[in-house]
Image (cartoon, rainbow, N blue to C red; front, side, top):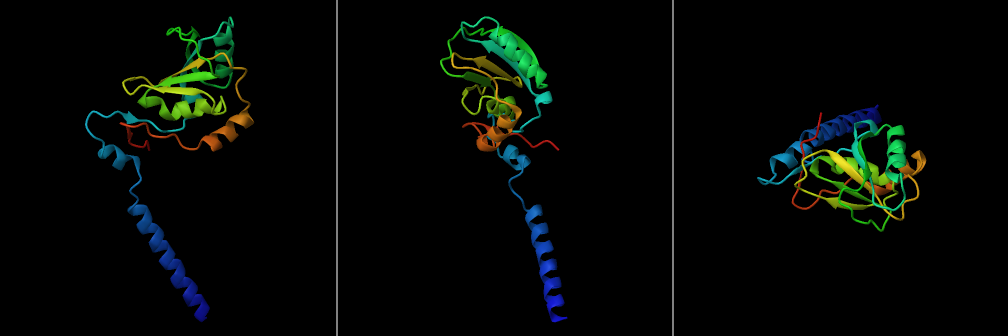
Length: 173
C-alpha cells in the first residue's frame, strides 16, 4: 500500500514537471522570430515533403539533356519542377551539384541535399525572396540517390543550420 502511494506521488510529480516544461519551452519559432533584429531575413527551416518543394534544374555540364532527365526524375518523385535547362549563370560546377537558395528555402534545400548524399555545394543568398531551390548539376553528377539512401542521408544531415545574419521564421502550426 505504501509503495502505491509513493508511485502515485511520483506520477503526479512527473506530470507537473512535464506540464511546466512544455509551458516554459523557449525554443519555439515564435520566440526566435520575435527577437530577430530589424532587416534580418527570416529563414524557413521546415523540412518539407517533396510535393511541397519547388525547384529549378539546371545543367552546368557538357552532357546534352542532363537537366531534362534529372528534372523528370525529380518530377517523378513529386517535386514541383518549375524550370529546366542550361544554367543561366553559365558557370561550370566541378562537383556533384550546387544548390542555390534563399531564406524561404533553407529547409527545402536540406531535403534536396539528401538526394546528393550531402555532397552538393550550397550557395545561400539572403536577398533571394522566392522559395525555389536551383539545382545546378556539375561534372561529377552521376545519379540521384535511391529513396532508402535519401532517408539515411536525411538522418545523417540532421536539422538545417541557420545561416549567419538570419533568424528562424515563426514555426507554422
